[in-house]
Image 1: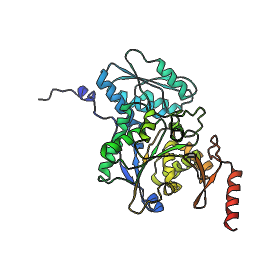
Image 2: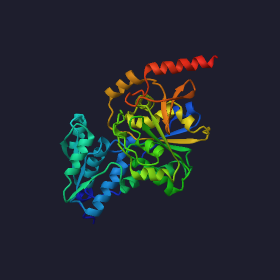
Image 3: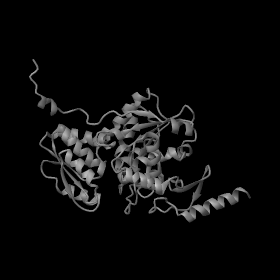
Image 4: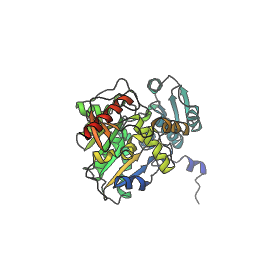
Length: 381
């Protein structure tokens, strides 16, 4: 006779806190791009974003090594703290979550409903994170957003799933949004582990928060002092040192897009899939919706497979999506590859001397008109 109780079953520790996610073949994008675009739908994770994989693994490992008397403490970003709150409830441990005063009340309610102690502090996530670090006591465990091996290990599970879902056929590339570098570190680690060492990772940031791209160009870690981006989940003054290290041993293409491109991609993705994702996820998707992926990978053919990690995220709602539709529908396609900036005019990328990182378009309307006018004039000379 089984004498285990329902309560024991309820508190049993799972081996993983994330869920396997579907890999969806996007017919519309695949048709438009003459290749096979697959969407790894991380938006369906229990906490709403891909952070569930890395943060869930970190929290699980913390309880595994230190027991259930610990207190998880975090204040480093919306999707991270939501993953911590969920993980704590699932693991049966306490958690303190610090969120800035500007956080939407509905998101604060989610944290409370998970049973975490919520502290509202500061006007931004930097202040919230600094306060969270001060709260760590003897049994406290500070949960980082990106820079920890257990976070990378959790994110690497994406690649092991992809290997099965793709029938062990390596894709032509994987498109991966980059903030602090935790997700990318896990993706590259996973690729190395399964032997897909030649599969390039297209690391996508926004112009106003491109610490990884700047670091690769400089050949050293670079800090971005004044970050300006709508993609709040990609905000990071610097990336993990491991990110730069991995970029030296694995093919990585650092790429940056405008906030407007990312926002418009979020809108188009919602129209195509009836699912909403935040601007950070839109950054990666924008390479497909603008066809820039064909410029990055000119050898793509009808048989080629490109996987886009749809990171999801909770910094999105219908009101924001409506705002994107009104302000950013079909914006100028302005991208940065390495240290060079290009504006797409017609079907070609034209080099331009600079970009405006503090504006969502990355370029003024006057400059866009001048560039297009010069292009038309030169075309008919």
